[in-house]
Length: 123
Image (cartoon, rainbow, N blue to C red):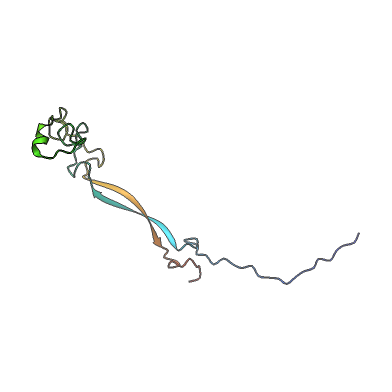
């Protein structure tokens, strides 16, 4: 029956967000790069080391630290690699696959090129 009059107040313009659309306002972008490092597992030989003796050629060297060369010589030679530290049949390194280098991906933060690191859209 009675209609109420809607009171209209002053109109306010909506505030537009001024965030950079590229980085979302953080000023940083996650970037990846591929790096290589010398293979520490095979010591850059590309051949896999003997996993029975850890590449030392002697049993027990990885468990104790021999003080002299005589102590190393008195330890038993590894039967699997015959004391060479490498298996009898050459196998490609299990870590670098024979490439002598390990490749890995590194993630880092880079400055946004669009806003220059400020995070603002209007720059």
